[in-house]
Length: 357
Image (cartoon, rainbow, N blue to C red; front, side):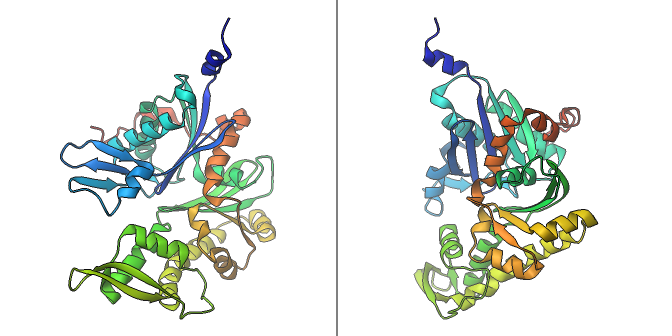
């Protein structure tokens, strides 16, 4: 007679994988989120070996050992470094598996709506290399909508803006499908880059990624702060002397830098909303838009957007997890999963990966 433990091993692990530019988040059916790690690897430049993944790699960032380099193998939500993405995904999937079980896995993965066949093939190949038996690919915007509470059966349209680190996805969803979408390779990482650029050019201070992330998360805001003189000390390397240095940065100084990026995103949203059919536009006028993704956590982003597009704007619960939870819901809707998954395998098999080693 089979013991309970071995019965468990026969069960298929159903996994939802949100492989993002900044973070990889994995949820397993029945267990919710099991892994949430930075999409980073630390590589030994001499041996080309990966010496650390995820959080461990991120902790080395900016303080790497002599021969070690921390890299993000995904750019703008797509695979930039195939070999490293493959290894990173395999590592994370192994971490997320139940008790080292050797069961056949099935997974739903998200992808940006304007993904090319070659980019999609790269993602599929990476998943196959991670020993996932069956892989479904699904549009990020649709997954984020389901994760934010939009019902697949709802015939009226909902607008979901998924603001990630490397991409902004806008999806208009009705009756469980995307009726209109737009994806831009512009995300909250742009804010970090703009802050670093400003500090270097105007304040003579070179700062690392950890510092710009802290500045964005704890100090920056998408709307004009009440007290523009509020300040924070930023430490780094003095550009002139090369020595360690520090500067005082005010809220009034940071705001226009952040606002310039947020305005570009608000403009994309605004433009997209002008492309809708009248009935769909009427639904969105009633309902407004839902914000998901890690970028949605930027202080005051919802307020800013509300003023810009003159529509209600709400931030979904735990916006970083909206996409992965939407993917996970697909296992309860197998017919819908077949319908929405974008696996045109005949097309994909012909899309050769030019950068496969």
